[in-house]
Image (cartoon, rainbow, N blue to C red):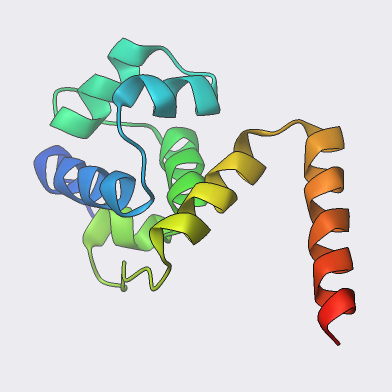
Length: 114
């Protein structure tokens, strides 16, 4: 049986995860996910209940579980430095070619230090 989602509680968790991931504006989130700014604002302020596919998109972007957004029952602790978060966000907003370049650069950096 599925629990009814509390839009206000989910909104609080969305804002928390957004902040911990280093997003500075709803506009940044909207552009990254290809959503309208008004939808992101309404979801993060509890004015509009996000559907399951949007919750999944937010969860993937913020690095949290769908369950945590919906219920708060799993951890949202992100043990990353601001620089690590910035790099992850850049990777996520890159196209496939950009992501491949970032992965190659990371591999070269790791192999260089071994």
